[in-house]
Image (cartoon, rainbow, N blue to C red; front, side, top):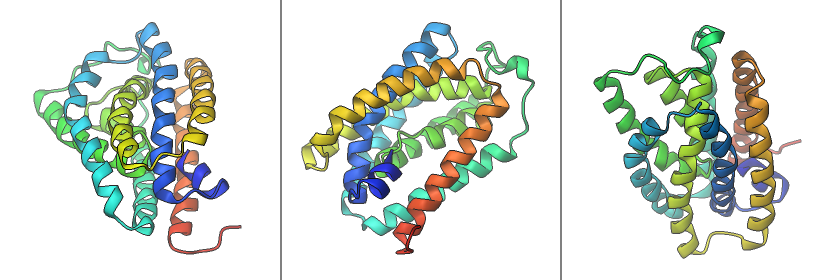
Length: 232
């Protein structure tokens, strides 16, 4: 959403970030309802991690307000590239375990590590307006060892809480473009509901490939713009 608002509609990067977070809330509502109903999302794990994610979200908003737009664009690109590489290098689990919430539960050490990193996810989410899924999914999948479908589903409902916290800060600071919020919310609510349905029918390898392609493309486009390179 941030690349679309920034590259297509010409929004300043900070306005794109703030406005995007409102749409992220709708994405979470639409997708999470499907995932939670099917029992794919790990509700308790997600709520546990949100205790630090929300704190990071508020901090990220305050930081984004004072940082130069070019810096936000470049960091945005680097975060997406990191997420793509992390997911690409992770060995694929057996397909039959991908949508099973009864996975092997993580150790206390892994939970505490994920809890600390989740505060960073919240900060990145509000700082870049991305909901945090591109960072949260690797944490859930690589550190806590959640199957990729469970990680995706859990992240989907988590980002709604994270984005809500960030949106409130941007709202009071006047960075949200209200003319676009309504259409964005309607579109993302419809899209996320349909996406959650389609995801249940796709193989995990397909989801992984789509995830990598989308975030690499978005990262490349926004990163080049932040560096002042003309985009064709």
